[in-house]
Image (tube, rainbow, N blue to C red; front, side, top):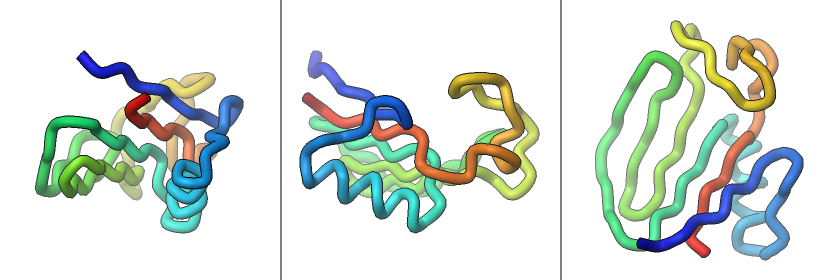
Length: 93
């Protein structure tokens, strides 16, 4: 099984490639970007907090305008109120 590294507000990426993901995520208002090393996934999914677009090895998660479920980052918050910017980047090691 492949291992992943998770970047967050307190642990930002240092490689140029992942810094670019982080910058684009902020510009597009994404909360989570996931990069997979093996599995490809395609389509759009929606749950109580996010709408996600999956394209190949990349998934992009954006908070719904009216999320019905709170999510834990550092504290339990309503995502649309205080967590509008990029929060998590998960990438293969």
